Image 1 (cartoon, helix red, strand yellow):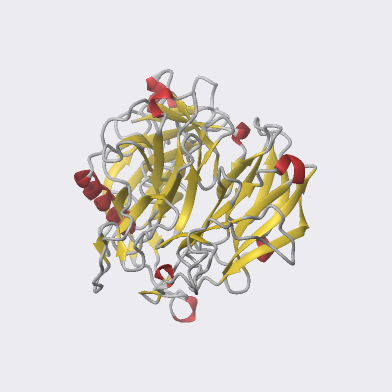
Image 2 (cartoon, one colour):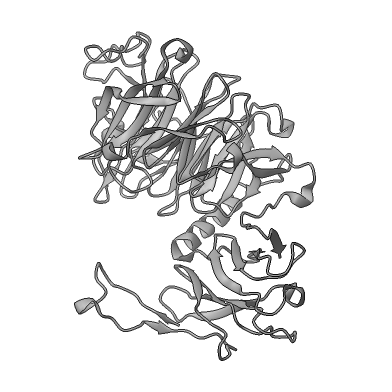
Length: 529
């Protein structure tokens, strides 16, 4: 099997390039079909050989999967050989390794003609949990190292309860679900970063595309596209939904109002309430929520351009790097919003009076605590730390001179007037904190009052009691990349990942079932550790 690389946009001169590596398994055999299927990430490679004989049993064609790894640009080395634990009963020509999938923490293997309890050639999928660190390459390895550092700074204690992640909405698959808005009848609008909003019932029925914004969106990076959505607090009367997205042609952040009717959002009803230039485009913030006071709050990003912060977040004359608070109850094209009279900077000459708090870098997710009304913001870092902040009116949270409790490199800063984060985690390049809600649902009593969050690269879900954030705990581990959390209408907790059904965090009735597999077909699932 040959692996090719390309140094830039093209595969060498004339489109031709010799292989950078030719791999064979340590004990490949003639006719084993080594290389029939593969999945690769930087630093990790899984290769299927679906016609390989079993190494110990007298069974031909049962199949195998070879796992390779490498450090940086070093040579590929075989680390493991996977064969089905039930190789004899799976039968000859089972085709184990016909398809392979390499996740952060798991390897999935398809066996297209495996015999099992469902019958001869019934097919099966196997799931293997990786015993070591995630095989996801250098960038993720950095994130894991940082997570270990985080564990050293603030030990992740024992979770107060056991939970599992269960598919919801009938298993309906979404490409990149990013937000959920619950309608009064119990159905939901699910927004995806690609601009699609789907209307569907709680059981997944009646699923229809309610709005398609893809033609208006700018950017492909994670911090661009459709970023957030919120129902108007008077939705039962006005049928309005509010959407925050990065818009063509220049990536400016746009906050718009749309009208909903008959499970559809009318694209012609868009009322653009606010547009903000976001230089750089992929750190636009994006959180939109209505507070208990009925006003709309939006988190606006302050990107770094060519390695240099813009400085907007410390300039009250600019909206970048702030949480704004506006009254949109009577929004019209002529008068899109009103600034509440008690906003903290309404009397400050030169200030943008919409600003509620400032000094944030990329406030991508935020939620109000349903019990206390406190506003919690997960702020993605740049140099040193990601932050979780309890945001108060008039608060300065440090960016773009500081992150966490440390000044940025080469910057002398004074932090006596800066609101320090409630919680911080080391920032890894390409990663970022995924802020969630404070859990106030009734189905998981052990989590009541816990702030829930995750991190883009590790797949770990954490929490801490809002009264003692220093006692963080590790709640769950998933091989899925987290994108967002959402609270349900009764305080439930939902977890969104790319290319997946939306998952609900539920209590574990039988702990042995907590680590659920994500791979199955008509023949069922055989999980192996």
